[in-house]
Amino acid sequence: MDSWRNRAFNKVLFRIMRQRLANCESTEEMRDLILSIDNYGPFIAAPKGMEITPTRFSDVACDWVDMPKSSGNKIILYFHGGGFCFHSPKIHSAFLARLANYTNARGLMVNYRLAPENPYPAAPDDCFAVYRGLLVKGYHPHQIFFAGDSAGGNLVLTTMLRIRAAKLPQPAGGILMSPVTDMAVTGASAFKKCKDDPFFDLSTLLLMRNNYIGMQNPCDPDISPYYADHHDLPPTFITAGTEELLMDDATHLAERLGQAGNDVTINVVKGVPHVYPLFYQLSEARDALKLMTAFVREKFKQAGESIDKKAS
Image 1 (cartoon, rainbow, N blue to C red):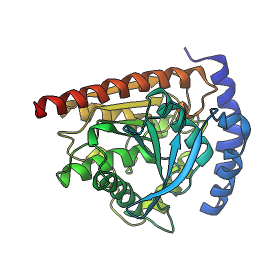
Image 2 (cartoon, one colour):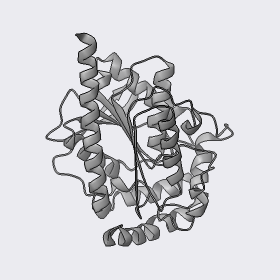
Image 3 (spheres, rainbow, N blue to C red):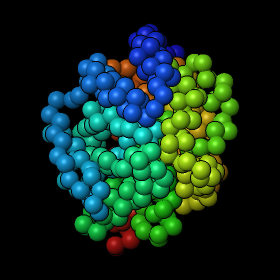
Image 4 (spheres, rainbow, N blue to C red):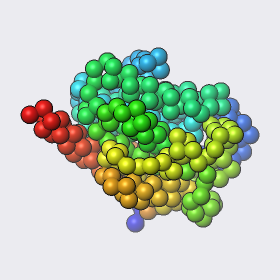
């Protein structure tokens, strides 16, 4: 059962996020709104000791996100959400810092180019380029873990598919939080939950989608990874809430991944909003972070053991 704090949070989120997003008539208005929310203290809850250092890989802007327990040999490569159109750097960095801290890793935030100024395929091009750049610099794939929320969850899987196509070594695994996987919007939850989702409504979702893909085919697997061939992909952890438009994007993808023989874990939580793990003040978010931490630690260990066996 969802907590009273979550129910109260959903009401606040509906008022300051969904209602105001629905009134936005342009991407610039949405960006201004998101920036104001990103600077709203109760949403951020940044951990103590977080350090952010700008860097570049393959000429793509990134940020190292480090905590006192961060280690130099393991990386959480993070693809942020924001409908491919905007970024909430404080909220996303706070989450990445916690995940990096709990997994004794360094966080690397990819600041990929945004739509509509840079529509598809700019974002997946940048994400793939950063991963390839890490490999060129000598970072080991079995010590890299992908994570992303919403649009970033899409980019996690899209990047894995591009890695497979390029015959490059895969990362140790991936975390997808409330991922956008079906740009054709065929999931029933997009319509059944259109009045319940406290984060955004269907018209806002479609505006962001159209900014990103324009006249491209929404069923192209490089745009909607739900429609891809899912064989031979890394272990994947997927989570979503029951009240969000994109719940079916998560659950249907998990089914497809499992049918293709992949190691997949799906965690659907009652009552929580879109990308709920980012809101650390919720007990459900803290519980999800514990599950993710255990998953990352286990898959890092398994990937390392596999490398050791091949070497011996």
